[in-house]
Image (tube, rainbow, N blue to C red; front, side, top):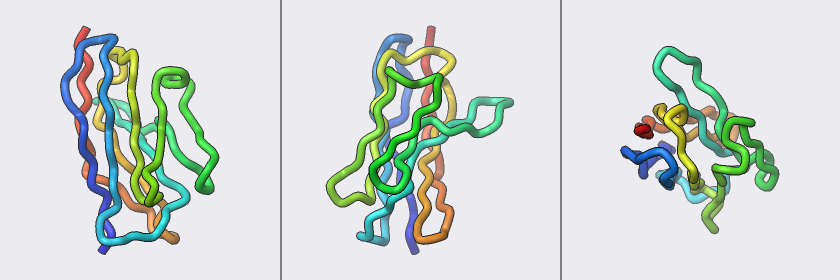
Length: 115
């Protein structure tokens, strides 16, 4: 059974940085569509950044220029480098992958940015 395992969340001051990691356990196959979403209290889950079709990247306007998504060499791991963090980035961050037609979600990792 393939699962997405996230790590790297935490508490950081505004202007700081964090790096999130997500790995697909139980499979060594490449995953073309893989990325990050977030959900703040009282708000809908929204796209943060994602790889589409393996190479193309898509970022939300709110994080462009501050966040960078990257992949591991095995192409079943994805990272999110978050710089210049703002209090409004506070949310639970979820890894998402389209694994050969299965829509997978990680358990979520909390990111809290203090002002």
